[in-house]
Length: 512
Image (cartoon, rainbow, N blue to C red):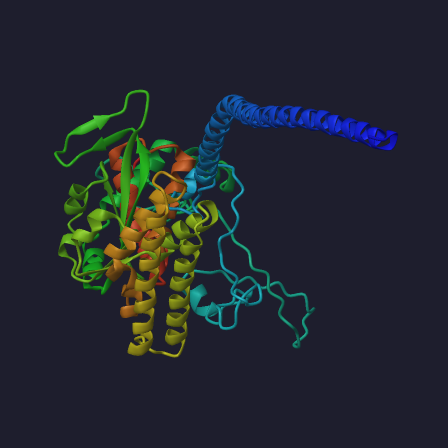
């Protein structure tokens, strides 16, 4: 072998050896690489596991810390909701007055009451056609002078001229009149008060609502101290007049009418007598009693009862004998009498206004608007001398009434119990559903009134009387007041002279 061959062999052997060494290193690297891959995979899986566990632990820790807070927030939110509902309820209760509920005006206190009158669109002041009150001299002055009802005094400032213009001055003279009645002997002389002073005293006590102290002072002042009746004598005047008033004719007028208004109001007294004639006297306090009115456009009759129950109505014996339309303020006992009922819509309207404004129930405002629309239509018909509503129009109003009742029932189903307005809505829906005939009668029969204001006006003076006197000092005094006001109010309604009517009952001698 030549040196070249040996060198080439040696070089090839070295390359083979190097290749084998490299191949061994390569195998070792592949083994190490496989191990590293397993390590990387293991570490990756480990990291994923650790990450998942950490996230779960963090979420669990956060949930553990937040859950009580969330529960506390939910609890506080519920408390806030309940508090808001209670605040709204208290505001609604505090905001109720005689203008938006059935509460009496005496409960208003000193709270400023917003007028609940609806704008009429007419100018303020006297309307066209109303009775004027212009100062004028009566055309029958000479006849009045001859009858002793007036006095005509002439003051001539013309100096004898035949041409003159008469200026008039209207005044009033108050002076004592001492009338001497001469008779044959036969008993000591008597002194008594005349019928004029008796009737004027009774009028000022019961119609003018002057207290006895002020009335005695009035007579002393206007007569220059010549007439000074005691308070006891003033009471005797009222007792004498009341004892001569016969109310049977008033009862007959009420029973013959087609509509009878009735209402009642509480008063305070130191004595009251029940149905069994048992007398109850107050001790260091006052007792409650009730004045009840039965009235129509021409007649007013007042009665007194110890209690506000059906027995008092039976004792009055007026409603049990009446067969017509009874107008009242949704008082349950009055539904037992009469043939039909015209329940006062004005009272209903005030309650609906309170539900709309205080309980945030717009449905009540829609019902109120419906009733006012019907009443406006009725007034327009009556202005055109129509005596009944057109049947198609009445059918539309009836359908609208039923639709509103259904809407109220649906709204009630959506509300939760004991929430603001729930009880008010429930009671109102039931009332409108049950007493539809009573609330729609004013449209079905134009003779039926829209309101019971006639009875309320006839009772209003009772509250003023109580404010002046505080209470009635005896049961007989209360009965006398009812009889006298029945006479005076009926006389006024019929256009009569109240003082003349009182004079007719003032003939009893009052000895001093």
